[in-house]
Length: 175
Image 1 (cartoon, rainbow, N blue to C red):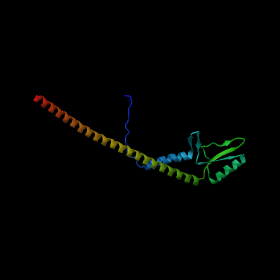
Image 2: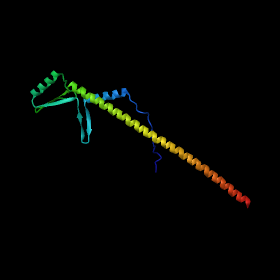
Image 3: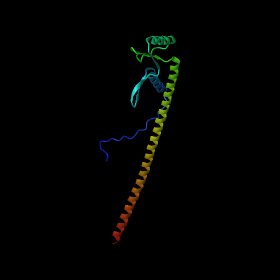
Image 4: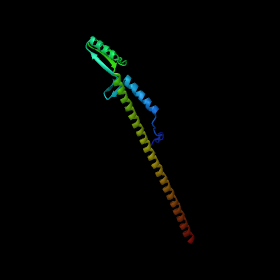
């Protein structure tokens, strides 16, 4: 039993999802930003922050920390601003960007991953829309055939009723 207040919506066939260089570039820019600044990953046990562009190092002595920071500065690796340094009596921790070559290689992987995901999304969308369109076209064809059959049966019934009326009328006239 259906509720009269329920509104059922028929799935709508949408236009094909076409490749857009602008859309791809926008998606890649978002993924690059997420890669460079870090992001939160949700898991079944909660979640954690991921900072794939950073190397985080911990030290047991302040002197080791200073040596590391100096070495990173000499090779041109900037401090990673999205993870605050930790300083306490037991250990020190600091994060720096990974080397530029490594980041560039990882960013290429990010771009390729986004491009593959975009292509897959387009393929899935278009396949879904083709399937939906085919099922709707089949349903329309079946409805058309059913209407033809119902019209044919209605004509046959009307003819049979007319023949029956004529036959009974002729029997009644003969008596």
